Amino acid sequence: MIRRSIFVVALGLQTAAAAAQTAAPTPAPAPTTPSAAAPSAAKPGITLEKFEVRREKAFMRADTEGDGKVSLAEWTALQTQRKAKGDPARSFARMDANKDGFVDKSELDPFLAKRFARLDKNGDGVLGADERPGHKTAPNREQ
Image (cartoon, rainbow, N blue to C red; front, side, top):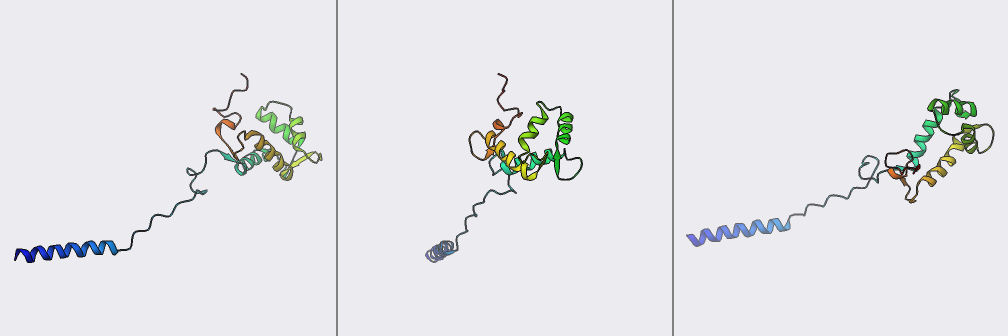
C-alpha cells in the first residue's frame, strides 16, 4: 500500500513537472523606445526643435502689430522692456537676413539654428545645462 502511494505521488510530481516544462514560456516584455511621452528616458537638455520653439515664441512677443514679422521699433521696445544688454539695432541687423527692416519666421529659423550650433559645444545635438547661457551651471564668463 505504501509503495502504491509513493508511486502515485511520484507519478503526480512527474506529470506536474512535465506540464510545467511544456507550457509556453512567458514572452519577455518588449523593449521600450524613448518617446516624447517618456521624457525621463530621453537625454536631458534642449534639442534644436525645442530651442527654436522657445526662442521663436519669445521673439514673436515683440510682434505687437500681429503681422507675423517684427520691425526694429518693435524689437527695440521688447529689448527695452526686458532690460536687455547690448544694442538692439545691432542684434536686429544680424537677424534681418534680407535687410528689409523686418524679421519673420523664415529669417529667424536659420539664425536660431546657427545660434544653437554655436552653443552646442560638444556637438551632440542637445544643449545641456552647462551649455545654456544664464543657467545656474553655466560657466561664469566674467572670471
